[in-house]
Every structure is written in structure tokens, then in C-alpha cells.
Image (cartoon, rainbow over all chains, first blue to last red; front, side, top):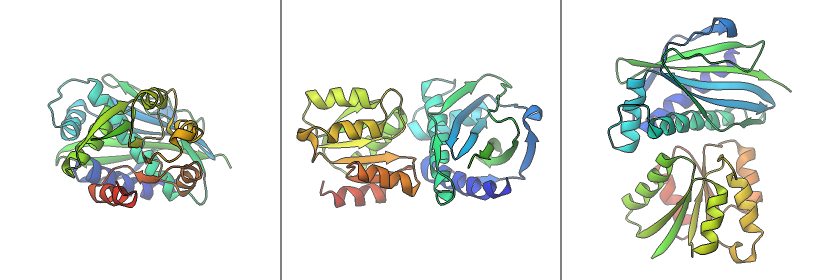
Length: 157
Length: 122
């Protein structure tokens, strides 16, 4: 599982820098089991993985953070979870998942799904894999805000 | 004036592609589609000079659109630039095999965008 952490951290940093013109800093990574996974977030963007690896990748944020990111990307003000906010979060997780594939291109051929968005206070995510531990990578953004990148991957090869 | 067809299910990405053209001061008009099916309809009823094409989209994805377009003699030379998050080498090879003219990995950087346009003499 640990081999997945570094590529996700580095891709996430690059995507936020180049796509959102914002620096993000990874915090201490932790692992939880599927049953222990708790969400205290307002919106999550999820991409399913299939092919020679199965699982999912999710980005979870508080709404204030999602609004700020969307404002940067659209150049206009967003203060509720509208189609632009869901579009922004979906596109970010899509770009992260697509770019991470490159790091594993010699070992695994992975297909990514279209992004899905879950919204609602303290919503939960039902992870597709039975056995995998979930990698949670917390990031700091905009100085004092946070989001979490969660990954569940099982090679099927 | 040249017409560019921007195909992406993300409204924000379509706007970013258009803004990049404007920043580069390339005069053109735009047609937009959120999937390959709608893009194909626009292609049949408009004279398009260049297509910017996402890969992962609902209804008809970019690869299906590309195969369909390249199968039509009228569009065999139409420049199609794939703009996608699909960064793996095997994805790029597949797209080139099916006739994509150029390939840009998201996030789009202005410098790369400019280089790719110059490569296809646009």
C-alpha cells in the first residue's frame, strides 16, 4: 500500500499548483479500515479504478474550501454547492487519478471511471473493495484549510 | 475566422481551453459539446477547423468519437487534439493509433498548449 502514497502526494501537489494556482502541503498519512472510515466533509469527488487494479480514489473537502477552489477556476463567486462546484471537484479528482496512472504504467494498466460527487454534511463513502485498507492523505490548502485524498487500491493482476 | 470545437463534459475545462486561446490572442469562434455524440452532431452541421477533445465523457467518449470521425473520409485530415487527464503512455499510444493529431495531458499549461498548436501549424 505504501508504494501508492508518494505518487499520489506528488501528483496532487502538481495538479493544485498548475490547475488551481495553489500550493498544497501533505500531512501525516494514516490508514483506516473500510468500516472505520469516517467522513467529516461536505463534498467528495470519487473515481473508480478497474482493469489491473480495482478500488477508488476520493477527494473530500469542506464546502468553504470547495467554493474557494471553484472561485479560482471560474473567476466568479460561488457560495453554495452548485454545478460549477461539483464540476470543479469532479475535474480535480479526474486529473489526479489520470495523472497517477502514469506512475504505474509499467506494472498496471488501470482504467478510471467518470467522477461521481457525493455531497452533504458528514456524508459517508461506501468503498468498493472488501479487503483493502484505505490510505488517507490529509493536505493543507490556503494556509489553514484542509482536504483529504483517500485511496483504496487492490491490484487484480 | 476559424471555428474550434471544444468537447469536454466539464464546463470549467471548456472555459479554460477558450480562455487559453484568448490569452494567446488567436482569433477564432467556438462550438462546445459535453460529449462525443453532441460533438459529432455539431461536426455534421458546421465547418470546423480544429477539435479539442476530452477522453472520459458520458454517452460517447473521446476515443469512440475519434474512431467515428476518422472513419469518415471528409474528416480524415481534421486536426484533433486530445486534452485529457489520461497520462499513461499506453493511453497516448492508443490515441495516436486511432488518428489523434496531438495529445495534451491535463492540467493544461499555456506553454504546452502553444507548442502543440504550433506543431500542427494552427
